[in-house]
Image (cartoon, rainbow, N blue to C red; front, side, top):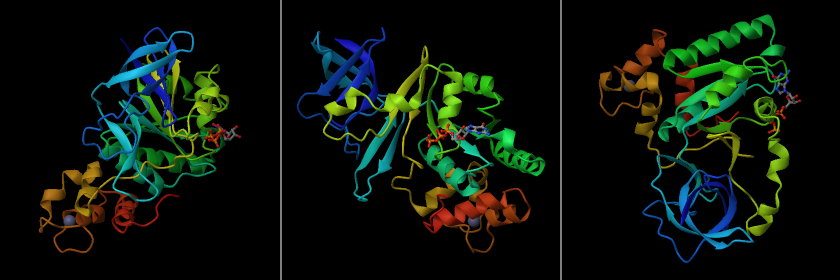
Length: 308
Ligand SMILES: Nc1nc2c(ncn2[C@@H]2O[C@H](COP(=O)(O)OP(=O)(O)OP(=O)(O)O)[C@@H](O)[C@H]2O)c(=O)[nH]1
Ligand SMILES: [Zn+2]
């Protein structure tokens, strides 16, 4: 019996790393209890498992147990069934990679991500990349945006992957942690990761013989070791985390700057849209809650598409 960390999953095979760095291709034998979780997959990237080596020469293994998870991210299936897909487990933090250069990340997209991360209790740092190509006005605007998010309590960092700015800070941020890295295509995710771990090459790693072992060749998330005890989880093709089973009354709780004010509204079932005596709208009016954040809130309440 050994323990290991699940680095990838194809749906039927799981790539497991043991503490010595040895890689096994593991699978579950028979049916495994999902312990009440409404998900289609019993094991996710980031899971810690116990396993028995099945074939020494082939490096295959049988997974016998899964350690309790500290947290996990579930994505609702495209079919909107009651069951979602567990994207990753045991995540220490998320990095939302954004840019105010091109392709510009909207505050709506940032807020949607932050709300999801709050709902999964994952602390998030917003990294603003491509600072090297911002104009003077662009830089001033970025400073305002950073202040806006820092006031709420989010850690922010500005970087240039190409000019090596903020790269040491980025490396320090990831050190000894399991970090989910997310962001739109083109913001510089691979450039920034390659700047701190040149040997890794995110892109080429995606195509491996491992993927051929599975019936479903789509891998939803993958874990990469950057340095000892330092991992990133890449979610290729996944732009937003999405929310599971979130009622309208809950959304306000995932805006930290609203949380403390929620019990000050006149009506305790206030949705902060057009009710009289609303402490949230009052705070927006006084500038204590940013207009852009409130707009994101309203958009999420409408279930509107706020992805861009
Ligand atoms: N000026 C500037 N360009 C950058 C920076 N970081 C990345 N780029 C450029 O932006 C483009 C996209 O960078 P990638 O690292 O491939 O972006 P990505 O987010 O990994 O995008 P996908 O590969 O589509 O997921 C490339 O042409 C990079 O050279 C930066 O800090 N400054
Ligand atoms: Zn209210």
